[in-house]
Length: 382
Image: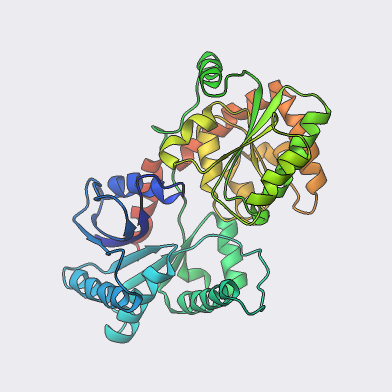
């Protein structure tokens, strides 16, 4: 089986989940003849088991990029590649759709991986940002109608895309995200204590947030949780790690306004290659996102043995251990309960320890090796 994978970015210090995919591709390349297109890269790609690389130049124009990807499509198609898999990139999938549908009579299979709930209302106020978002939504609709298959996961997201975009079930492939258990793994209690002291200079309990600092990701709840910690004089801190977003400035203001400097630490952006230690020293992972798909941050936390509290959005209830509903999964319309339950959980060491073990056990399902087999089995049936 010959497959071409389109990777949106390959950056050495990327804080995004694309950093995981290079490890996945290396393992996938052991099972299939794999060709790789990289749209943006700041390093020379060194990924094992890839047949050939096609790296787009950063300074190439949009039209030239479009033409180049069409050229690569036909070059690979003539080599026997008939599966083209684009990961979460409209700029990557649209040229492939054009080449396949309009120039090659739909002879190959174009697969577009997409997974996420769009919860931010569309604004028609005339500015560049809103216009760009409107165009992206139109192009996404076109892509969903024109691809051969949509890939998403877990099963709850299959239902979401079927209803939201009227995509027939037979055109949706269920494919999971993976996690490297060599990079993310639990520490012993003693190791955790030592490393926590080395990194933070304290042995206080740690709540961890890792995501973009947007309201849609629930960043606005962090000051409320920290305020509870402050008022209750708990021996707890919150570490907030994330890319700049629409709540970044407000988050810093709230830290000062509520005197939370000793309770809520904004660490800013951390490269994914350096992120594992923060999960390993944390006692509770906070994911107050108001919309999700298959959040890899949950897999990172689970593999590190860090229990997670999250809103019941996207595929969260399928990803987390099955008995999470009562304590760790909160209805989206109950933000006050999310705040209160976060405080209750961080004080329940017995429940956290129990859930830590269950989280790690569930993470094994999503190991890179298991998900590579899932991909190979699925793609071989196309």
